[in-house]
Length: 473
Image (cartoon, rainbow, N blue to C red; front, side, top):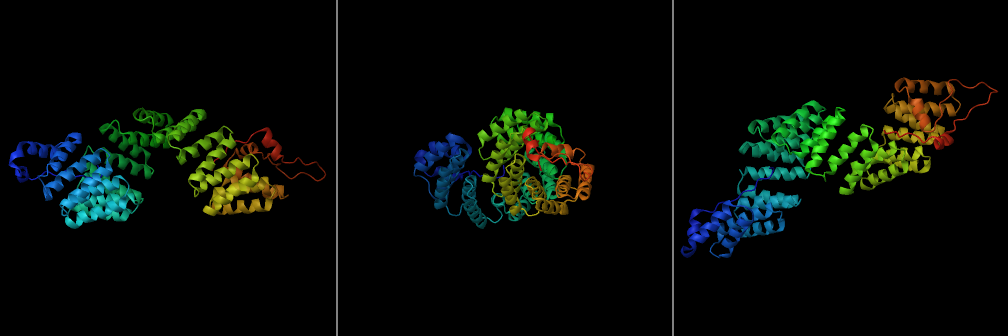
């Protein structure tokens, strides 16, 4: 557990505070300090209501009851009890730490950090409070401050949980090798700590080592066969290796554990899509989006699936959902631009490409897409300018070479156009067939002789007769 909540055992002398009630109160104190759940809450409540206790002993009863309220998810009640504990004993560092945990559970990290600060002031070597403040900083995205707190906590008391937490902070900074060192140490301290082993798998995957990631997910699942996140991430690793059936098997197992796991549904849809089972993939995306109507990845994935089925209007609708949820998503604006372009909605397509390029001026795919839109609109000079810009960034981009070649030929520059087209075909041999699907007829190999009838590139007519195939940048 990343947070550590302390139950406090009352001092024995407190049990003798009222001689006439010693047996009952002693039982209540013992249950309040050692039991859990409703029994502990009832016992602590009786001790508090007895009126027998004050100061530190009263604070302990409130604090322990707060621990149980938090465990039941009753955060407001837990915080109210910690408030009373602190009133009764302002020097009780554990009450500040525990109230901080309750605030953090409600995502109020500022208040949580303030409480951890007080706990650490009262007890500078309070390793758990340092760890918990580090976790709050981590959740705020302040990873370096989190690491500093984890460093101090580990110096005071080395612990697998704290090493794991620090490893996560390093991983979030992209320092995956350093993170793996911490996960290794955590696993060495506790060989059965599945979370650290799982996180080590994530770090290896981030480094591009899918095999070692899978080995770690395997180990984590050996320790905890119901470790759902490990199943999902192992599926992702298998998918990276193009082992789609094994990936699907892992997603299936994850969904047996929780049929409402939108991420597992989305990921299974991706694997099915790669296997060519587009309808099944769409069904999974539909289910994921019913569970989470703001799941951007599922909208994007479903849009690609719709494009594969030549359902361009449906794809555009999904891309629009992505840009509503994430207006800064340049890839979605670009994808929407392309989908609009292939069905002839050129003015709208230009607008989408422009949005993508406002967000990311050197976005090669968006420059290429806008070049294609301008080519279809007959604006050959502007089209060539965009293709030139794309090729300055990626000189071997076959789509831009082919598009520029087509634009040059439309202007009458057959020799230069043929050079670009030949270069594109050398990189992507089937590109002519692909672009025929987009409505661009294959070009003549040579310029037609004077006096002969030229065959036009009937883009729009061809597009209507044979719907273009999806293209994904």
